Image (cartoon, rainbow, N blue to C red; front, side):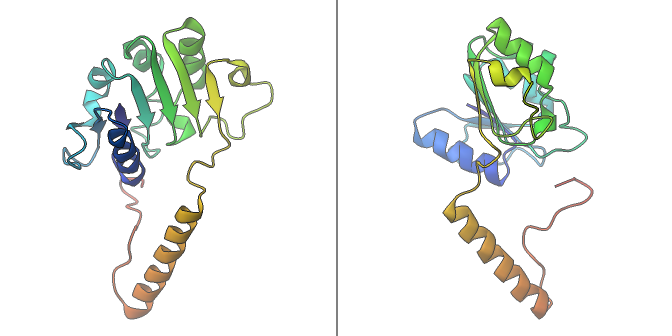
Amino acid sequence: MLVVGLGGIGTEVARRAHGFGMRVIATRASGRTGPDYVSYVGLPDELLKLAKDADFVVNCAPLTPETTGIFNREFFADMKPGAYFVSVGRGRSTVTADLIAALNSGKLAGAGLDVVDPEPLPSDSALWRLPNLIITPHVSADTPLAEEQRTALLRENLRRYVAGEPMLSVVDVERGY
């Protein structure tokens, strides 16, 4: 499995894939470090090279100018024939028409999308009619545990704010996430 975007979500995807016995590789914009269950961490400019051998590609990348439209005709053409594409990152990172073409041609065996572009997806979108595509309603992170974690983070950040301490999970405006 190739995990694109080895941040918080990507790291959890990688951990679970490794737990199922998959060899996991990843890309990460912030450097080549990663957990020991990721056998290789590449930089974003290695994306096409790494996609050639992956049976599964999972988009966990944030939406930035650099990631907008990166899953496009060129990317799908470079993917391993018969591979699967899963997107839980941001919908605009995928060029919808190019994904539809790759699924219709049989280049990809299938895809799973928790995010789409546009969102909400119009009722007449060709995505709804693809037999090799599963679409979920942008709720992949909506679990009781995730709600507990968000609440704990909110409480801790409120405590830190009152105490004048640095907060956790602060967005870096320059990076876009």
